[in-house]
Length: 482
Image (cartoon, rainbow, N blue to C red):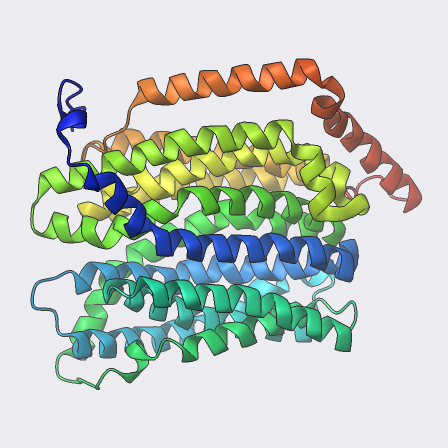
């Protein structure tokens, strides 16, 4: 794609385009904001109610459930968006096919979940934790499909209401459950499953569509056929984003996994709050324009997303670098603040790279149905990340997971940029990216010079907290990061 015409395109664009972009993104921004704020509030409250060990177990099971949700169910959400955009699509037949594919996914989950949970037995996962995680996985899988249906039916405000209900309902029910069963990490998992089930009742359109058996089986196979490569893509992406918590819990203890989860939740949710709304909002229009072969609309939508990602993403990463210790104290409390702050800067960089990959450059493979190419990018990066974690986490603890997170996303992004150009040239301005990064680096340097203790205190405190924790527990490595 060529760069935008700087001589007149910007000034000749109708004035309503900017307002239209804001109005289009507003419900999704509010939905992302509601979920992100609820997630951050959950971190602040649950770390204190569960303690380091209990929160680590909860975060590890949640990460495992999200990995499988990404691999089994999230690909069907993309299939809904893609196939609904087809001219003359029969909603009843598509809904029947989606329901059939969902049932097949539930059968697969029932086989895989016990094997996945067995990897965490060493960390102290019990039967009630495993059951709660499975319930959450299935119910949230269905809710994700119902929400994708709301998007394609142009019901953004219902989408927002249900996201808010799920997120804040899960937190409210978790607080209630922990009053009845104190310090039980299964309680917030059951609460989240109940909240997702309640939200699903508010999105009955997919469930109540008439049964249309004729041709639905073939369409379900087509959905799965389109989604299967995506399943491996999302599974690899989920493993790259979430498997570190599972491995930290196994090799370094649940408490260390809890500290890492605090840092990851802060960075991941902040980037989601700011960066996801516009790309998510325009995706149905993007696929519709691609189906109609409207190259100009596709280019314009992607250029808008690129500017959004650059101008918001880089400053957010810089803010995490300079404010990591106060944020870690707020979220994790005194027990988890120092180790969480030590990994926040690296995880912020990883979150930025992940956002550029998933929200922008991955579109090249989706538009041309070259999902195997994206699978190769993520698969290579996930394999490198997993291998490095298996070697480094037992030796260095959770800080190694932060190193490999940045390295893994850098590999995946580089591969996606290089190989994606063969299918579709995604517009992106390196000049704008470098200029924004340079200004952010100047801001970080100015802050570091003005407040050096705020910049270095967390990093210097991290090894000390690790050493003292290991000494108190009579262990040199297995309790690292408590």
